[in-house]
Length: 130
Length: 130
DNA sequence: CAGGATCCTCTATGATACTG
DNA sequence: CAGTATCATAGAGGATCCTG
Image (tube, rainbow over all chains, first blue to last red; front, side, top):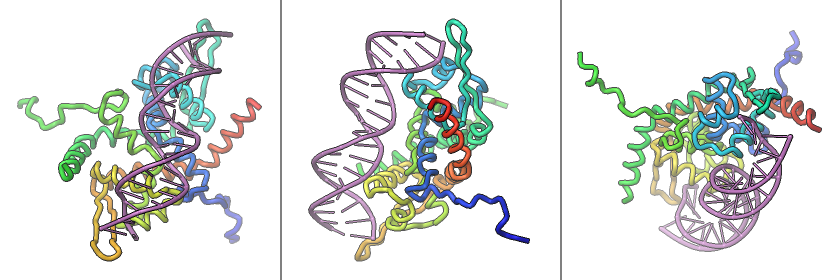
């Protein structure tokens, strides 16, 4: 058997390395707007721009649009324009985007589930130096 | 049975809500420095400041210190000072921090594993409007 | 070694106004 | 409806110098 003929990727990515492309990718998916958008689409399926805007409270037009464009460019979601009047635009996760849903959802749920513990830790920490 | 006497938390957290505390928490844990720090400590166990600095390439003193302080305040890691000369400081994940390790690790691995697909998607996207 | 304190520079993000 | 374009600003984050 020739061990050199496997179709394993030759290049290894490592986000710990500053110049590794995966570092930048980790950075772009590691922010609240991206994660909330992914989770919203993961739970809601195909959604309109206005639906996303309503679901993700407090997101500005600019940030939502920018986030959607970035995720679309990275192949995580599709953008479908229906040329009606007024125009209708739908967003939906791609299989690639779906593969990111679970980790993202866990992150969001972690924040929600452990909020009390974190709050207690903060109080204890702040008390220690008050 | 009295349904009102369960010790279920009364308050529900929802990061989709702009004013929910979990939204801010999600934001603080959703950034590359926090995630890389958590994963580094998760894989490396107890680590010194200088070890973390070396492991997380490209992080500045300021960002590393700031990240460590925030994570310590949130109860995700402990900071242990050994008053030797020179001083030695070790960081280690708490059980709470450990509970965040898996989601974080998944996120980092996702970025590393899907980098080629994302790259292909970007090229396709950019070609479409070149 | 492990930071604290400063200064300075971008970038991220919000607010506002306009459009097909 | 679903944006684009512009302006303005807080804050992220780097560089540098200093210290117990």
